[in-house]
Amino acid sequence: MKFWLTLFLLVSCCSAFAQAPVTGIVFDKNSSERIAKVNITNINSGKTAYNDLKGEFSIAAKIGDQLVFSKPDHFSDTVSISSYTPLAIYLKPVAIQLKEVTIKGKNLTPEQQLANTKREYAKIYSPSSNPDLLNVGNGGVGLGIDALYNLFSKSGRNAEKLRGIIDDEQKQKVIDYRFNKTFVQGVTHLEEPRLTDFMQKYRPGYYLVTTAGDYEFIAYIRTNLKRYLRHSKAHELPALPTVKVDNN
Image (cartoon, rainbow, N blue to C red; front, side):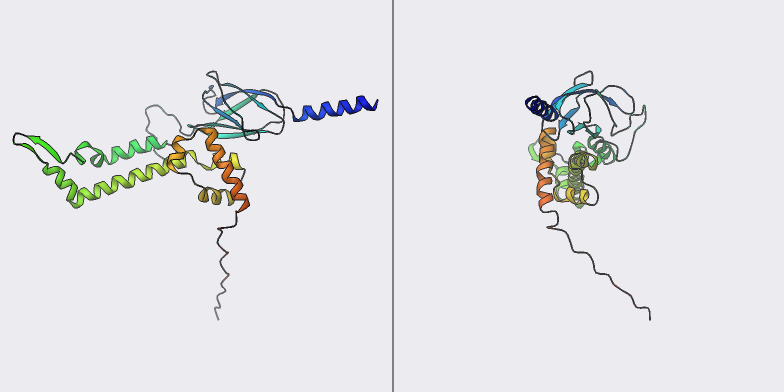
């Protein structure tokens, strides 16, 4: 009797920690249509998968694991597994799609914002704003007058500076678009003000944001989260002293 009881407890214990396929379908929250190319990452095991063209997915997980669903043009969502019932995941799109309407604002992707900026500052992005210094004419090769003016004039230098500022700002927007609070909080589970503090201290570079896959990007955040939790107060500023004003 004791043998069978021990065996039953052993099997039950193993079953509790065993992984099984978690299945489901991912939908667009606004249109309720199925969406594909969604990355699913099991934060606990590190396993990752993509759903198929029908929006369906399957990934190994155990009860208590957390799955992060992410797609570049949608906000990420985190789900905690409580059973193996098929899931219906609804991701909210980042930009609202309206017919024959140009949307301006923070919901635009960085590429759309840059396109709008280039239209607004068409002069500094036009080919004539930076012509070649050398041109070919009837008299042979010579220096272009327009090129020299743009190169040495104050307005030409200012245009180059403005274009550099816009390009740098575009890179920061690309970083913000991917390294956003919703996604980072889904991975780290940090709350304010620690979430903002973590994002400021471990803000990724433009190269990492544009080259890392979803799994590598989440791994980057999780690795730095461990560092942050060990040294979260290392760079915190002391609280400002309370100043009492005597009105007498």
